Image (cartoon, rainbow, N blue to C red; front, side, top):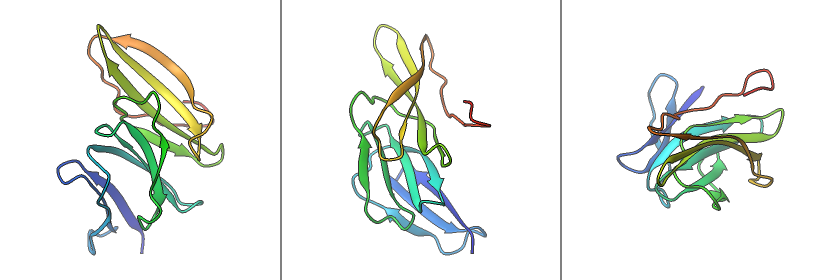
Length: 138
């Protein structure tokens, strides 16, 4: 049966269920503070997520096992993310508050290496919720 996956900000968990909503399971329950966004790579059997509470990009197997940190440097309030399996890249949004709000779209290899900033802008009110890759472009 097909599955759906989500992050629960209130309980700081990553969960899944069958596509009809039955059989809800807790997959990742430790080490999370504010899990924002989740993206799946079915070909590799991995899920990736952003956590604004720990300022990390992380991943685990689709069953929640082998959770690991991928990007922990220069990450502040990561938001939306996606996986581009064919390019073997993860993409995410990030924001940092100071005198202005700096917003970025970044990407890295699936193992978290080779982090690149693709878009950098300053905003007065950040509205960067997600990112999607289409036809090799963002």
